Length: 63
Image 1 (cartoon, helix red, strand yellow):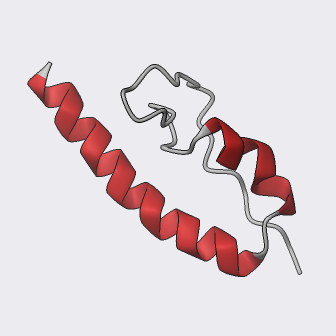
Image 2 (tube, rainbow, N blue to C red; image 1 turned 45 degrees about the vertical axis):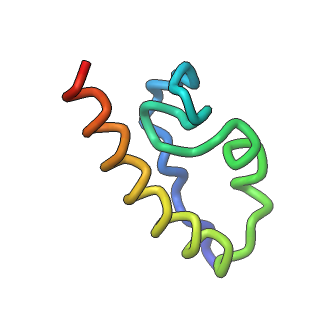
């Protein structure tokens, strides 16, 4: 099975209050584990990432 491309956009910044990358929404630990994650876990994380990115964008609008 072909591995999915990482959601990383090469703008790594974990300075947010929740520890999520401001570029892709993942935590440092999720970034480290990405290559060894099962497709099922990746599906779950990708759904969560879309929610996180929305939260990050909303927080940036407030600033």
